[in-house]
Length: 317
Image (tube, rainbow, N blue to C red; front, side, top):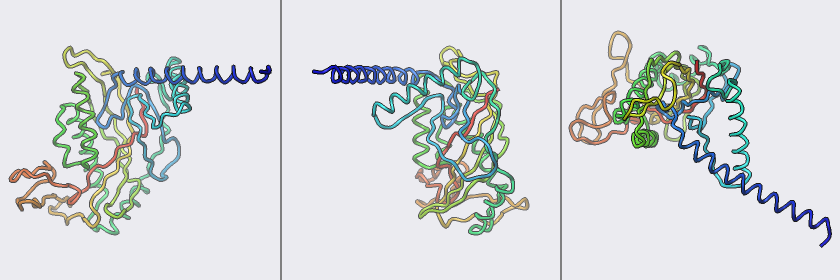
């Protein structure tokens, strides 16, 4: 065997060992990251690390993400390259955190550069909806979403997710219910205080074969931290710091459903329908379960419901 071939073999063996070590190290890193308790606001978006996935500019199209928040990264696939990239990302983020600031530093100040949705853009999107739904109003939708955000955070903190069943799709409801149950099983309570919805803007509207889809940008302020139920000890987050959160929500309803005509002098619509199973009156603003026959009602047949939550930015002060 000549010297060149020997060198190639030695290099390949060393490379294989390095990749194996990195894969093993990445497994440990991600196992540890999953074990770290994070301040999980409803939707599992907030975390110990600030982020901004949509910087700069005005208006622009919608943006979706499967980011799960809480400083935890999830990847699909099992190739060595993905593991290596994951380790590099983790190391870079760790270094930035230790330097005390920057975009990823939970203890630093992030300059808010997240794209804002202008009032004109929001109004134009409302006009698109109104072209197929004459009684739709931007103000009523913004109020509906703001109220839903507050109610959702309270339900999450009180660990009673049932009231949210009528407000979101079955898939999203089940996913978030599992996340909340995991928090309960770990003996943690997520405290969410001083909730303020600062702005709601309409960002995009489109129709598919089954649904009307409306994307909205929410800007909120919360205090978000997690305590150990048995001792009251704060295990993550900070009760003395505020988080400024930016989300993108997708609301859907069955295609062809329209906003009923206003029922009072203020122009608001009181949405109430009959149960499709027994015909009894059912108030979808209260529960997805008929109080007479106890059947579950699909809310998308009557009104907008939440189908997706994406985390756009977080700034902790």
